[in-house]
Length: 91
Image 1 (cartoon, rainbow, N blue to C red):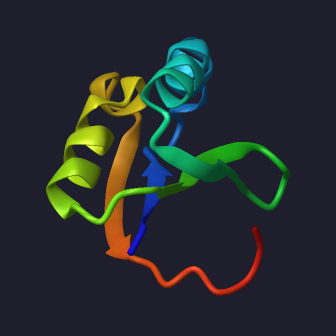
Image 2: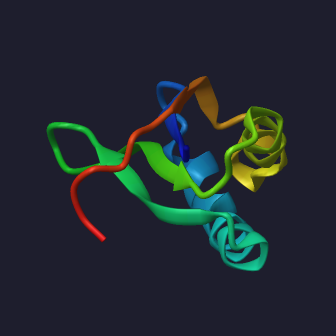
């Protein structure tokens, strides 16, 4: 069962997101655990959070991955929800 991360940015943290985006994307690529993801958008189209699917059956591994994300280390997120996920639709 994969896990889904729903990460909501702190209000006014767009500059933190931008400053850490390259490191975040490198982490995603280097770890190879995220199989789906992208930024959530506010009503004006600005980035305000992240949704990622992690290919692991181990909740502890998903939690460790989330904690190691450069966005998390930079204090970007107001909240992070980690939930098991039954992948039914899409590749």
